[in-house]
Length: 285
Length: 253
Image 1 (cartoon, rainbow over the protein chains, first blue to last red):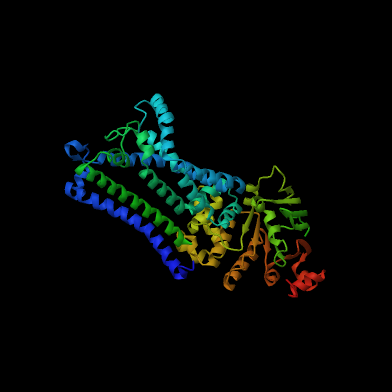
Image 2: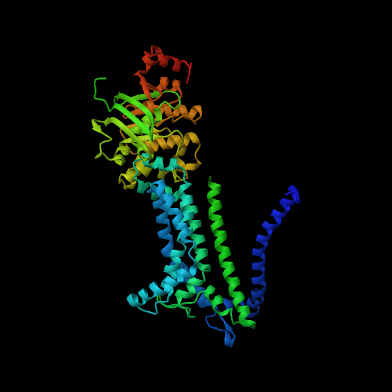
């Protein structure tokens, strides 16, 4: 400490803090620098909206992958959002605090399971189940959505719990004193009052789902085509980058960076939407 | 006072965990009048009030002994439903707590829960209850704007209207004017003196003058015990217990 002194420590900490931010900035800059010239050179409309991806022939249309990512993510929302919000509402409103103290950390542990393990379960259990009961290849939009839906539960549940707990107790008492039951209070007063935080949790969950790679590669099948039904096999934007980066060169490599740019933009939009929802809540107080 | 008591409390004891808050309170509350409850902070008046609509049920570790009867029915009987009780016994809190909805939606919240869906009926209820709470003229042109935008005094009167819309039998008020300006306070007091013709009103107040102004009977609580209960005039002029006199004249509390 003596060596550095008060101001020295402060500078050191500032340097460390900014290096974390600069890592983020450098990654973003690097991807944009590598990918943006390709998008402009190839034509943004052709790149985003054409549906043939054939690097050998120099065709780089990522529309099927965009559609696939959207489908899988929306599917994951359909699975994860209702489950997550219902779980958060139950844990905060209907369960004694002690039980909550055990259950919430357990749910957060779910976030610590490596995505490969989720993928593994998807491949070994879910895909065969879908194949035998619903038909199709099994490795599909449905499998991807189900697995991602479970993966984003911890995000949705823990942020929703925080925002539901932040609702002042006086709202609940006011409603109960008017003869409402606990459930009526929960869905007519508490959840609407926590709405912005719940929306933010869902958007953040969406960001996780769209960016998830490993589990999706393992369970979604990776065929480059626009899916006709939830049972079709698809390749998402993230899967496309991870699968082909190893051997891609030249234009092909640039095209994958450009895919990364698209992904980055989507996730940035989602995160700022979540930020806006949270700030809106803060402004209301 | 020949009529049957609306509420009769016998040997009510209340505990939060191990701490005893109420020491065997017994009291009979006649119908259609205002009972004022006074006493220093921590004397158990709010706890007593919250026993009457069983709002304390939700507090972990809370329990009661003794009996409270509403129209002769034991409200802590296992077969008695707390939700139904709270429809008959409305409560106004110290801080106004409008729900984060429009003025109109706040008033119809209770009636909707009771299953009233008819638009005309609801409109009538809204107008009647807002009028009874002396706030109709101030909000009639903006019934669908957010209740949170009203001033504190208006919010409190809206909360009163919300209770009236449920057409309860008893209204509990927990220091309803503690955060209000004198004009809003006067309006609420005026509303109460009219409402007592139809409802049994129990008013917990930190302001002894308020009890003297509006209450027909007054009860004095101290350290969880009911010290004295009688007609307001008598309690304020010739208190039977010296502690009551000391409190009223401001010697402690």
